[in-house]
Image (tube, rainbow, N blue to C red; front, side, top):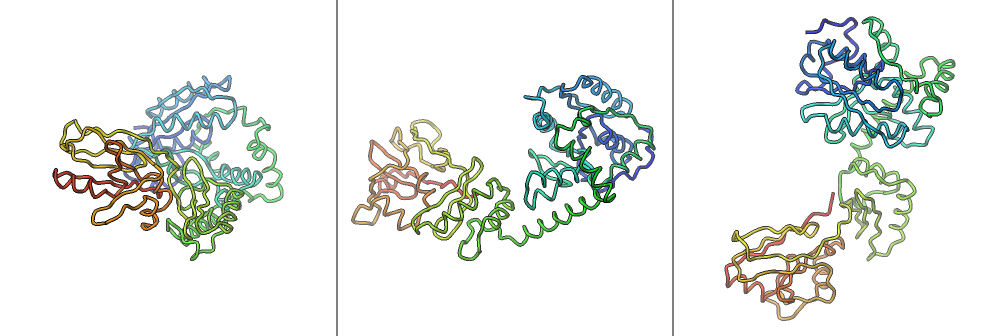
Length: 419
């Protein structure tokens, strides 16, 4: 076991999940060095940590940092993963995306990812977002923990000051790697760190503490707002005074705050001006908003169902056929039918339903059932020898009698479009 560290109260280890192991992002810089050293020497974390170092190959010293990480992890008896990446360009965003892809690949199902972001990083993030324009969530800064790529990311040093980290490094005689790009002020975040914050601190020495406290209070206010917002989907437009801000936070609570304020304002205006039979829609690759009959629906992205042929001449006796957004059909395979054609949005079709004397148009059936327009678009038409035998749950009288005579079964399970 590695020897114990000095100044072991860098953060409360009991705040970490007791049933998890941890993958620590280790750049070799001062902050991640303090985090890794502290975790490596804490008795409650023995055998529960690994480190991962990403070599972005963007600096001349990158290979030296990699060797430093290898030496330190060997000295502290920590398993280390090293990955070399080639970002698409030299920007901070490209490096971050490449690094996150590596993390997502290597973090295991029983692990949380730990990063070394601290209190000053939080203050810089809030200022960075404020200067670019942001809303309430943006002003909360980084979360102490959050779910990402199917894993839990934890920032255990987020409430820890940079001075405390510096004291810890000094008390334990630690060495680290300095990234010269941190001094290059053509990056806005570096300008905030190296130029703006020192000026503000000269006037208000506690500014980082105050920004951190403000971000924390705003995060608490946002959590309170989310608790008060309805969970309903669909959302009643008559019960709630829905404007762009309300809609943004409702979407945020649902995990789909993907639209801009401009888009939401235009959407709300279109909803207010639309006739009763219209369905104003706002679409994104992750979701869509549809207003219909005084209800606001958050739906899955548009997926176009495909025509297909269902073959019934193969075993087993019965089977489920996946129709994608068209749902699922179960048909008895022992029926003396070779195949059924499936199509969508076929105009001009009619069905004679069991126990009825006249045909009804498909349009009339949907009107009577009050079918939402997005469901109509994906309700399958089933044809045998070019004759319509079923449309979704509606089965022709002829087809119903045929199934009865052959002890057959047909069932359609509608695919839910609501998120």
